[in-house]
Amino acid sequence: MYDDGLVACTERELVIRRYYFPLASAKRIPYGRIRGLRRVPLTGLSGRWRIWGSGDFVHYFNLDPGRTHKSVGFVLDLGRRVKPVITPDDPERLVAALATHGVPVGGGPL
Image (cartoon, rainbow, N blue to C red):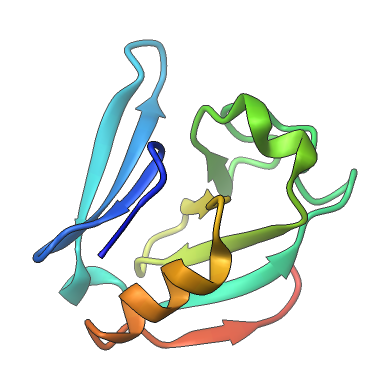
C-alpha cells in the first residue's frame, strides 16, 4: 500500500488527508468511484503554488505546504465537475498502488 501522510491507499479506498476547508478533514474515495487518474506536471500556472483549495472552481487541492517543491500532480476523475488534485511524495509508488486496484492512469493537461 501507499501512505505519505497526506495521500494513502488502503485496502478499500484512496484517502486524501487535509482536504476539506476549514476543518482539514479527510476525503475518502472508494476505488470503484475513480474513473481515471491523469498525471500532470506542476508548474506555477498549474497548481504548484496552490497550497489549498481551488483557483478555477474545477480543480481542488488538499492542504499540502510542501507542494511548492513537487513537480508532479494527479487529477482524479470522479465523474463530477470538481476534480481533486493530489501531489504525492512518491508518484511512482502511488501509481503502482492504485494500479493494483484497477485505477487507470493517463497523462494530459491540468
